[in-house]
Length: 573
Image 1 (cartoon, rainbow, N blue to C red):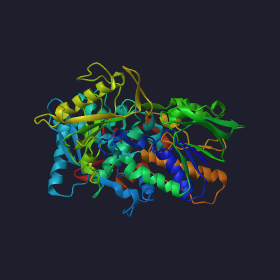
Image 2: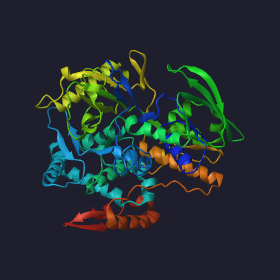
Image 3: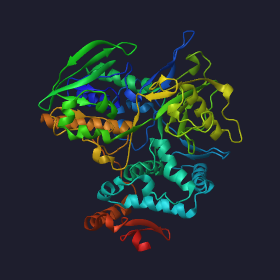
Image 4: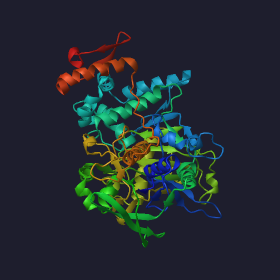
């Protein structure tokens, strides 16, 4: 078995094949560090015998609705951890919404309120988020109604109607107030999933939002979990050790350049081993019975020669319809730690759709003063989700992708300060000890950046262009990456792990194996029995009338009681 790509999908597939099903597995990974986009890396060399400061491709975020990835993490041993590396996750307890223009930050618990103060904070957040942001009451009600429609819709309606609508269209943003458009329709999708509301599928965007809301509504919910230290230390390196124990051969710095085939069957892969500078030093040519492509969509469609296979497989030929966008991280190393809140901060109106987390409070076993030059006391890790909107401060008039590294750092810092330094100076220039921009952003010349690792983004109607893991026209090539059809349907570590499980199951089916199949779980249907009844009614109505009938039977709140309206919104006038 040959797996091309050693990120979350490739490592997940190798784990399932070698650990429980006794396959001989070889993994080819382009980077000199394992983990793909999930990896962490040395950022700044240490002095005086200290280790290097950690760098990340972007901070890791593990929502409570994830099921596939935690199941795998539980099976990765870690010293002193009963549940393996899964015990290296810690719950973030707060979410902060930060705005510019001198507005106060809004902070809410990131879980179901358990104390009087948490209830007060949650209710205050809900009221302030809507009213303080200037969202009219009628529009708040409209948004709740749209979520109710989504929960009441049968699966057929979701895939045939809502899948082909953008979140902007579905949420009714056009013609509504600027605060509604800015904060409810567009702000959260830009910051959390690097997707624009006018592009993202209403089915996917709405259902992921419902999953997050459902996590928050559960007592002891885990809507936001993060690692207790740098990603590779807490997760990827123990995972690689476990794969090696299972006799997986994981080959770093190996670039697969071509997939050879004959009669619609893969016959081998070829490429080069790379030196420390990324230059080819040694060619390789390898063969196996089965092959898994676990590389990002842009790599498979643009960087690996396989023209015969693309001509044979409509699914491979159709990958060009999928879109990628930049979502990359920058880390600010601070002399004095600035914790902000115990969780993520969403800069809801920032030009570059920023999200941050103060790392040190979650890394109890990491002594930052023992790293770098010894002056760093805190790390503010920031995701930049919009590289195509013009900056507003030091890079006014320039998009992030046309800025130099220094300009990106200066503009991001300015946007952070504009949101946080309202009445108190939270961030100060003299507290910055340095910064580290994701090395996937490279500069062929001083003013034009190129992204070596963009992120797949969900767009309306893209489900039709997503392939299944098994290709009907190709006997022994299987796909395992976040662009494969999964329940998650977003470019996430969870989707990559789920896709790997589906690829392994497809291989077992192809081989006629009796081995146990990998478990695959659907997303949880929110809303309880009342919404389940509404979905069953909608299934009948949609079968008869289709989308012409209008919205689904809707569950609404009337006189304090939940009721189901089987005639949808038309009956309400």
